[in-house]
Image 1 (cartoon, rainbow, N blue to C red):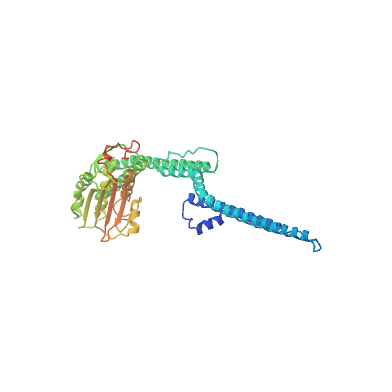
Image 2: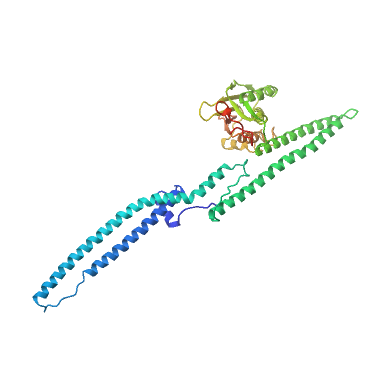
Length: 419
């Protein structure tokens, strides 16, 4: 349920007609203050005008003199009527001047009320701006931080305390999830090691081993290796999301990409793939965990190989942007089947695979690109997945640059990544 801040319904309709519905809350509050001031001022002027007109009519009423009065009395009455008429004209003139002056004063005060309303609205909304800024600074890696808004126990402080309680529950949930994944991965390695040792013992017994037993043992070992890789991926994903890496150094991203390609030369040759001309920028340096960034390069190259067709191609490019953004990009493109772009973004989620070879029966665990996304995010970078119109995938990883001015800065002591 979303809370809506703003003026009452009728005044909200007025501000909507004035084109202020899409403005900021400060603008709407200012419009509300000015509208209330103008309405109250106009009502005050109307009351003053009614009172003034009523006084003018009463002053025009004079006693009716008799016709049998002497001439001197008639002359005196005429003089009285003349003076009353002059007095009425003076009263009307004075009333008009007062109304005109009041209208001018109302206009001046309306202009002043805009500034006063803007200032008051800013003061009223300042705690909310502070809360919004503090909430934006809090991420999944800094859930231990709190708003800690002081002041009287009003509605704003109640809202801040509620957000702090929510952050506390989120922190506990995140910690429990990461701890469970890490502990489960560690605990499951013990039975895997036992099962692998049992297979070795069974195959090492004297005497010939039946062919079916050897085949079954080889198949089980392959499955155990797959489970072991899956658990290792869980560990990497959990540690990355928790920010548990401290081996931050200055790395050449292009060298990591070339090392990943060289280490998979046999797989590339076995599948008949062609490695197109690589464009490696030697000035593409980054701050980060050597282990995790190497895992990023390995995963994107493995993904390009595993989900490629026989006789396909792979292209790897690393470049440093020549702008003020200070970014370094690793781009890995590959051939393959045509993918739907609206579903490609799901590949960054765990266990999401597309296409005929991206199913549960194919290669991979579905964690490769999700690990890449988590590591990239932990290093304050971005991951972009694009389906190529001709078929295949284009993976772009953008990380903060670590040369020039940025190189002189030390990595963050808490997360091990560049600030």
